[in-house]
Picture 1 (cartoon, helix red, strand yellow):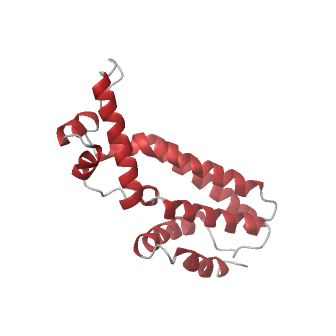
Picture 2 (cartoon, rainbow, N blue to C red):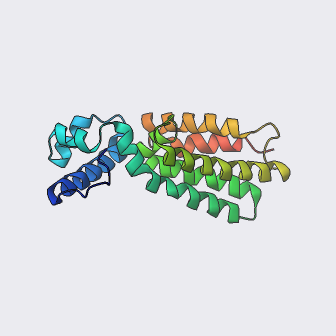
Picture 3 (tube, rainbow, N blue to C red):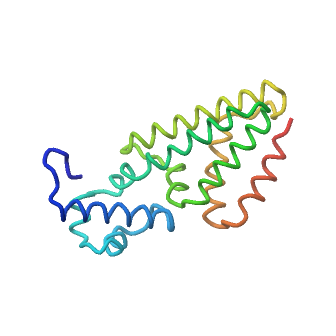
Length: 184
């Protein structure tokens, strides 16, 4: 990635911005596996220009997704503010998977191991912290089946990512069936 030691020329800065915009759009539409050549073409720059600014796909992820993942904090805070533990838990799941359904790239980010994107990892850990608190509250209130844990939520998130990829119009029904099965 281009370092901040020397400011970019105006044309180079424009190309970088075009690449970020193209990547953000294509990731949202098609997921993280969109070919980098398609991003370059969509940005109307050469593949060499893309690699000069973003040598790896992880460089795009590190630039684009921390801001998008900030929505996890908003969702978590909203759920934590809900006084009813069941509504807080179920509402958090609904909001989380709605976010994933709106953005295929975000859907992919939430289920992949991305060690080269520490800000992404940090945002995911914060989201897991909110979820853990919500699970603990629901368990303490006796409204969530007693054997449910954060590990189960991680499994659900991977499953929901697949449902969203394969059947984007069916995720709400799947989630509803799953959540109803979790009531104590």
